[in-house]
Length: 183
Image (cartoon, rainbow, N blue to C red; front, side):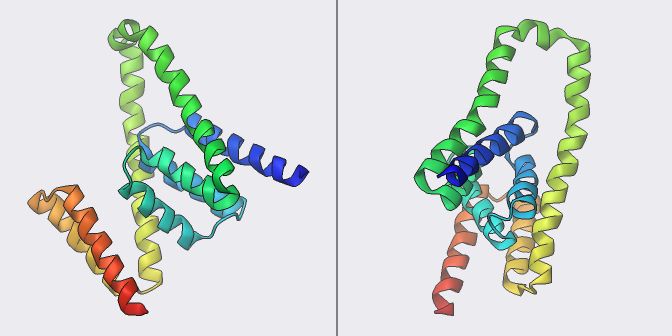
């Protein structure tokens, strides 16, 4: 019983800290979650993290919350998902509440504006790290179909401005067909 409570506390504190100190959107949180739950705690493996990230991204809602829910559910069931939700949403809720209370002061403050601009570079680096890490796994596994889908999706998005929802649905359909064909 004590081990289970300790695991709940570890889950809560982990997602709380990640959520509290992560700026720049959902994809910034993915490498931090991987580092914590795959590398440090060993609760899930790298392949599961990639799967959970794909599900979290293609599900409605914020990817950070979706990924936390999935990790919480995978490790501790429905109570784990609830603990992960709380740990993930409390920090931004508090931060946004404070910012909204002082919005005018933040909006016009040159220092705050410069800090936020500087943070964009860090966010870009973290997102790039996620892309390289996920692509690296596909290359290491020599997953030619997934590599091809990734490259074609990138080209379709960047060069032809294909709607991201269409790309997600098509990629999901290809994954489903591959899974069915594998059986």
